[in-house]
Image 1 (tube, rainbow, N blue to C red):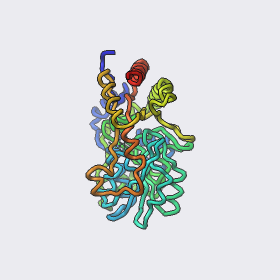
Image 2: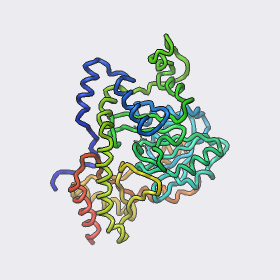
Image 3: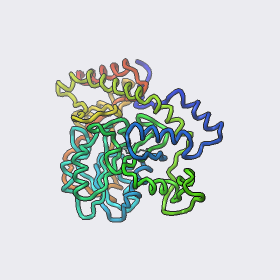
Image 4: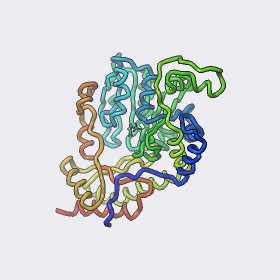
Length: 380
Ligand SMILES: *Cc1c(COP(=O)(O)O)cnc(C)c1O
């Protein structure tokens, strides 16, 4: 195989050009247009959330959630250190302290058994991150949140069309945040969505997303003049971006099926190596339906991973590592703290390698990658 196999190719659906052309021709490309509404209605119908507001990114959806949760200076927010910077940034911007808790080695998700010990009088929220579209143990997390009166904001950036005990990720906590960045299963280039579980939070969310104005109400004809009613920012994506995304949402099931087929193919072909103790494969706990956002393997340690990634690269395969835990980064040291022992966060993150996964990756490419991995482990 001579061509390079990319790690990611952003998803694209044929209809996107037609839909974008339609927006441009109508000269309606600003926020909350036809396609933005189609996307949010689609997400509401598919997830069952009370309200979905499209945003300019998942980072912004999380910032919006932090504002809605009234996160204030000195508040503590419990989250994993094995995550993308945005998970912490949204709360650091409000002056809060990210309190990092260790992850479970099987799913790379926040270890629900360690959360309660990290709760203090200052704790305001828990932010579970559904890594690779595999759910955190939400029953336990919601039970702790209820007992200590904490807000739950799900970072479901990778979790679209995945579920926990039959409930869509992003709909279980008070707020859920989706990403439509080009590295995610469905993309609008840059974009995201905020899912709001309870109806009473919707009006304020619309206001904050519209620069602190009641413009959304005005557009619905509920008031005859809009005005500045609260603090806010600008989190509306252009309708052109939503048009690009909507074309994919229309074929979302096909994209999901294709990704899952690739994921299963990787799993089956690498299973003998896992059985021989050479590497570890992802674990999907009972009750979790994942969305094949990612296929990763875990090798022995960071040295083996460097050799593994280099070997694949020499053979034309772009495999990559993932997060460097936030508590070890300069900003993590400055703004946050790790509660308890880092037993798995650093160790497991150093062993993880992600293999190419995208809509359009071919089965024979997966077979080639798996053959190369077998070769890596059979070379002395
Ligand atoms: C991609 C990602 C984000 C950020 O999404 P953007 O839409 O790029 O802001 C946040 N958290 C996690 C876990 C992600 O994977």
